[in-house]
Amino acid sequence: NFTPNAFVDEMVAELKEKLGNDKVVLGLSGGVDSTVAAVLLNKAIGQNLYCIFVNNGLLRKNEFENVLNQYKGMGLNVKGVDAGDRFLGELAGISDPETKRKTIGRVFIEVFDDESHLLEDVKWLAQGTIYPDVIESVSVKGPSATIKSHHNVGGLPDYMKLKIVEPLRMLFKDEVRRVGATLGIDPELLGRHPFPGPGLSIRILGDITPEKVRILQDVDSVFIEGLKSWGLYDKVWQAGAILLPVNSVGVMGDERTYEKVVALRAVESTDGMTADWVHLPYDFLMKVSNDIINKVKGVNRVVYDISSKPPATIEWE
Ligand code: XMP
Image (cartoon, rainbow, N blue to C red; front, side, top):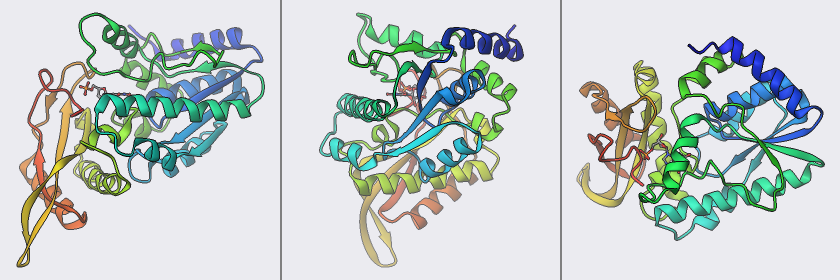
């Protein structure tokens, strides 16, 4: 029996009491959780909240610019840091999924730490951690085998002696969205699909190059825009494209081609723990496949992932 209005009132009062005149730093990701956490904190402490939005070079196409402008429009005290080249430089030559995650987690902390040192007297680090993150990061640390190291939780280095504030840590995703709606956040932003912290890096199987990022951003954009224009986006819990590390033979005019294969993935889920592939209409798949192959140079084949979780995971890495 969750009431978002009551939650907002109580949490704003609690944050005011807890934080007083202290300065707080928060990393915005473009996702629902960090955005709602920021707006809530902004309501409680205003300009004492310093938001940092890092471009890791692995976001969706044009996402960094668009979302940064949106944040500014919401009155958040936010700084955009474009560190794409630094991330891609550090990732060069790395194919192992866990090493990708760890590298991105490490570089993120370095960039974030550099930025927060520019601010004086910061006492707190705010995070958009939600309840399933808390549960899942406990379980992956257990003896039962590491599934994937989610870097969002517990990534704080010792030398960053900040206290942690996590206003959403008891909430489920749908509750976070309802709180966001109460706070007046744009419904389009609140309805965004989840997107992994390591971004497109774990959807580029094998090593990552700027060219592969460009291809995947373009493919993903055709797919996501297609879902929106067909009215399917909100019926899907999460969708994205995966760039496979294989070339396949195709034909263009009377030329033989030998180019990349992409997989499309769209799932229904409530919390990401289990998921079913979505039965997207064949006509939609046909249109999107044609658009991708015609518009994105370097791709000559599109496949659709029909695996459920478990035993498959949502991401391929
Ligand atoms: P899997 O692939 O484990 O994904 O079925 C479940 C949900 O978690 C997201 N995911 C991640 N999110 N850092 C994140 O912040 C990660 O390393 C990571 N790996 C997977 C995935 O997109 C899906 O929503």
